[in-house]
Image (cartoon, rainbow, N blue to C red; front, side, top):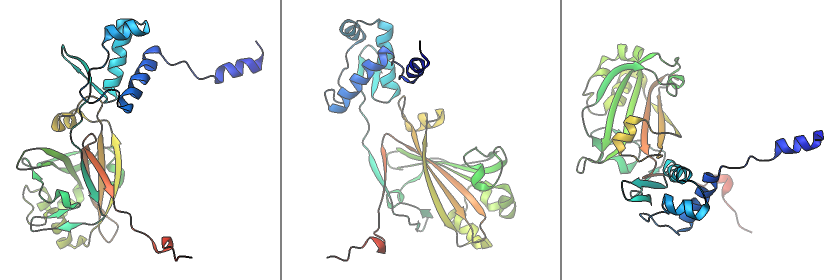
Length: 268
């Protein structure tokens, strides 16, 4: 074989496994609406007969669609197109609000409450939080961990974890208290000379942890959105990192876009 032929062979895209090709076809059919939420997908026996594949290969098709969050295996009921819960829109208008209880960062969350006692502990700083606090991952920090949701229905809307450097906790021991008073930790920080605080947010996503899966009742393959917010004092000290987990199958995050002066059309 000539060298050019060998190079061309190496550049050729790998052939996808047969189960992936069949899953691709079913995925497209779901997206087209051929199969609606709750509809039964072709059984393993039907896929085997239709495509000339083994039952094990047919099972891989169903497992792949379940991993992608498109289908659910129902015990003795086959594999069905997933019925997703209603989605709610969280509009981030880049403002911090405050009422008689404390601060909130979108108006839809004003009536949400902690659904249980706050968990306060000293823990190693997670890898995605430590750099924002200017410390090494694994450095001990204080965590204030809460489950937030609708107090009327008990529905969990978000998991919120505030991480604070221990030097700040030593300065303000109330940060470690169960009840930090009206305005919460932000008012206490500003009263101690760390105000006015400014906030920055970062939106990421990742696979759900076992705790998040259980708290939100997530199905296989559903990730979480992560809203990471830093609270910074005028001297540049990051006083807190607030890591918020949201169920990606039922939350949409929207932003209001304002027109800059450079984007104003003066007309002909």
